[in-house]
Image (tube, rainbow, N blue to C red; front, side, top):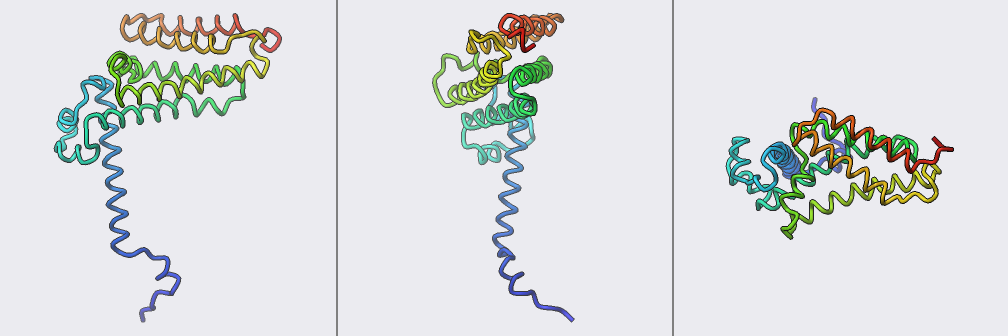
Length: 223
């Protein structure tokens, strides 16, 4: 004997067309994410400027119209790649460091994670760095997305340095902006030395540079 669904079941169950629409939306989002992942992998090799809907479509064996339907323009594709790169960067570099105590332990964790990210990018390249070269003098939405993402990360790192001073881990007269600037400079030098010059000592030099900065600005009583 069959039983009829209860009023609660009828009330909670979504309409069939709504269910189909939800599945279609979910599938569309999954497809878009797969395209963005492929576009990011391609952009690390050819740069954002070398990225196009046609080149991407060929690389993933998809029609140009299919890719275009998800982005609408090459510019929107490039911006989507920048957003995805930033999300991955934040998840790998920033988020794990937040588990460390405020102050120098967190600053050290951020730098350590940043170095690990560089180790991967020695082979693939960094969207922030290559994008800065490609779009430094080209105003527009793509440059704006690059600048916004980079500033967001550097602001987060700067806040960590400020907190280190507040915790007494740095000298009272330490310039937080100068410290963050110098450490950022180490990462840029590491990228250039390891990827472009292929200097095997680049990682060691960067680590030594970081420790020199901490020694110069650190509070001996707290370290």
